[in-house]
Image 1 (spheres, rainbow, N blue to C red):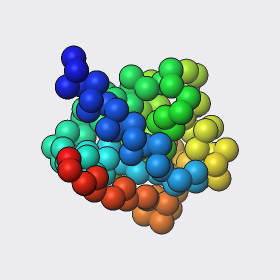
Image 2 (spheres, helix red, strand yellow):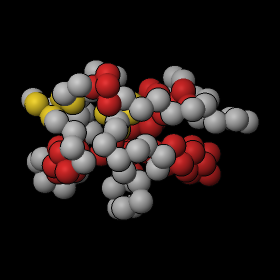
Image 3 (spheres, rainbow, N blue to C red):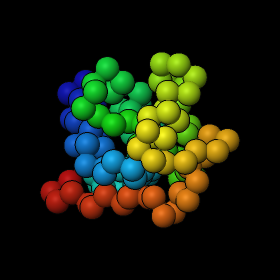
Length: 111
């Protein structure tokens, strides 16, 4: 369990850096922490973070800009509402202007 906790904490450290009004992807986070093939585990970390208001999990989407994690939020449209509150337009569960809003985290040293 300690390895998973450490992985999740590394994920959360990156997610907390996502600027308001921007989004990133599960894969970008995985690459940033040196675990490029672990995008699915990043998704598990996002799902486990919903009780922590310091982790803006709503800013993490799939590689095509789809709100694939929306079912893990309370209410059917909470993820979309949180993004829209930050000025991000969402149509049909997809980020409009996704490429322009994509934030790429830097690779963490020593990972």
